Length: 506
Image (cartoon, rainbow, N blue to C red):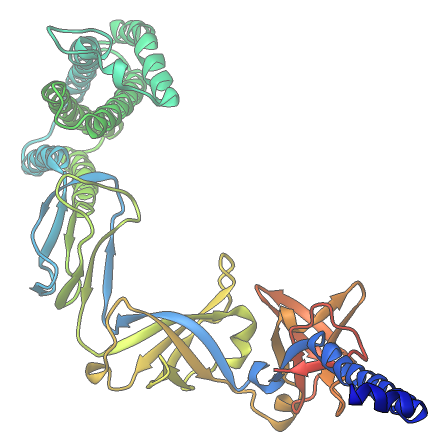
């Protein structure tokens, strides 16, 4: 009650005090509002990072490349033919010597043909020492060869192959059921259906021949017979291909026995056609030289027989793979029974002599890589450029570089290991280094139609724009060829930033 009495008795003083309090509260509120405003603005400022552009300089004093570790005396053996693997006579890690057999492909048919060819050669060599052969004897031999070739082709097509190609015997299916390649199927069918016409014309040509026929007439039929036998041999090759395909698609099936039996038949028939073909060649050569002494004629026959032997020996060699160097087996990718394809790796042998790296650099760096240049391998192992390919590979646009490894035996490199290398470049002048290019993350370059920019900050943390010239885009990076100084610190990322905008550096 005393307080109320006091206020009533001092109305003026109380009113003045109240006004002062209200003004003080208003001023305090305005000050607080001003203090909050900068904080609100600060919370909305974009946050960025600054990076040194020198971290992204494309250092022309080095050439980077990727490669694979090899042995200096490494040898890769590849197949030239298509055939199943019949035996593998070594294992990975085995020590081998020059000439040691490693892998053998199927070659029973070639061996059989070679044995017959060698027998033919021996016969020709024996005849060379004999007496002379009369013209009538040469004609008689040629006529017999023609009839034998006709009979052989007839039996192959109309008996041996006919029994399983389009016919079923017992529980065995037809081979034609297994042929999915339409082109192969059509080729087999066309020859088979046309063979009666071939026989008829062949037989008509033979009917008019005798000992009294001119040499030229007999030679003409010999040539026709040889063409027919060669076409029959091609037919057999196609049948063999069909059987091999069927065998690979139906391993260990009830049909396997039949397929293997058919393959044996084809192999034997191919041997017959090769023998007949060689005999026809010899007979034709004999008639063509019938006016010569037997010694000259026999010599020609012997040369022909020798050529057949040489050809078959070359084919046999392609099925037997031997080690060209002394070393250890590093790779044997195929297993027994698998089909080797032309160009497929059969074995890798690693010899002594240390390690090397076969590297592949960008084609643009060809002029910057020289022999004897120093190399850093895997960031810690030294090496030297041994050779540089004279041109860029057109398929991958890369240049091949061979690099010897210093102290390869004591390094932890492993043959077959993929590795990165850094090669000292020949272009290291001051002017070259001054004109370095930069490979910046694409998020740090603002690209608009017709222009590109990078951003820096002024002392007040405001965005400053710098025009640059860009080159190629490489994945998540873009090449900057001009407009950057080596002492720049640029803003990252540049999304939604504009020149003059205030930002905060994190």
